[in-house]
Structure formats: C-alpha cells, structure tokens
Length: 122
Image 1 (cartoon, rainbow, N blue to C red):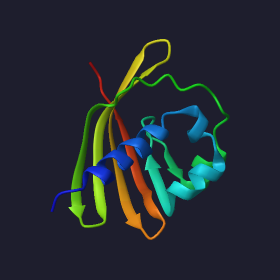
Image 2: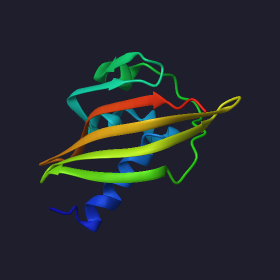
Image 3: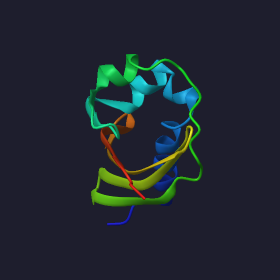
C-alpha cells in the first residue's frame, strides 16, 4: 500500500493549514476537517477536545517555519494515515516539538482524528 501523490499533497496542505492563522482560526474550515471525535495531547501537556479547538483560542499570528521539518506520511490502512514531523514556532525563542496526526479519509475528504505535540528539549 502506497499513498497516492494527490493524497500526499492534500495531507501536507491540510497539516500546514493548522499552522496558518487564516485557516486555523476559521471555525467553518476547522469544522470540516476535524472529526467529531477529535482530541489532542498538546505540547503543553493539556488535553484538548474538538470544541476547545474550534472555540478556544483567540485569533493570532502563528510564526511556524515552513516547510514542516521531516514531514512524513505513514499509511496505516487504505483510509488511515499517521503524519509525523517536527514543528518550529518562533515566540521569544524557537519552540520545537515532535508532532503526530492521525487522519482518516471519509466520504467528505480527509479528517483529523488525533494530534499530539511533544516538546523537544535541546
């Protein structure tokens, strides 16, 4: 099983959209890509539910570095993939984290079911 080039590009676009303010804080857009049972283990250690993600944060600039470092798509089954990468976000310092996302292909397209961020201590 190999993921198609079309799906790879779409998944990369979707994952990067989570790091762009214009899509991350667009509740209609996020409502379409977050699965109903979505949850996240945040870099902070907090657990976020779908509603937290849709309505929790105030819009703000996200200073993520692109392209996402070490971006990989690991096919779990025909309609399930695990995406892994390293995020680098500039605040007062650069915050680095290992990231993983579980995406499921539905009749409406790819939806995010789970995300985890784990801080990298250098």
